[in-house]
Length: 173
Image 1 (cartoon, rainbow, N blue to C red):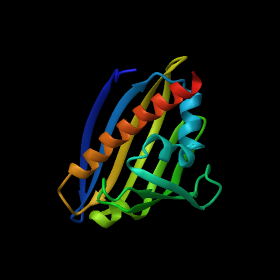
Image 2 (cartoon, rainbow, N blue to C red):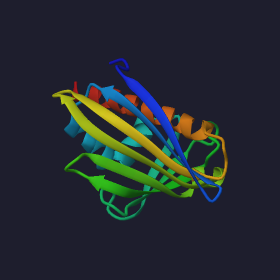
Image 3 (tube, rainbow, N blue to C red):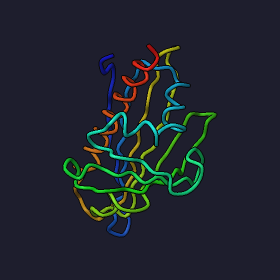
Image 4 (tube, rainbow, N blue to C red):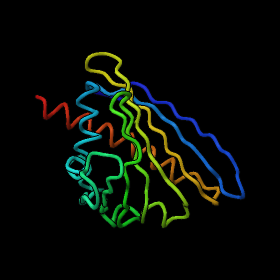
């Protein structure tokens, strides 16, 4: 299914020379909300290397059960593609009742590139039986004025969601 809809916005707040920024984007996917929710919130560590094998080499469970707040995942990246070797991310949002899921970078990755905090949140909303709106919010703090890395990260996150959609549609067939 082709990209049906996508929008983005950027907002900024300056506090003590640290730029707190937020980039939002939305995309529609042709997968039901429950299948997409399960893939993101329960199966992410197993699916990510299958969905993006050129970027993500492995996702390892470091702490927790893999599916609850406080879980820490270690993402190992293909160093030939990214300027990052690894990134530890902690599940900081998980609300099944509203289908909200968030990961905060706690070590490596974006934190090694001038960011003091970096978080990606997903909010899912059912549109139809087999159509879901995915709202993605990237929130980060940086003393740097450069927004290119978070913008690229947001684009990569949308691409990841599109790949996840294809994977789910192909595995259901």
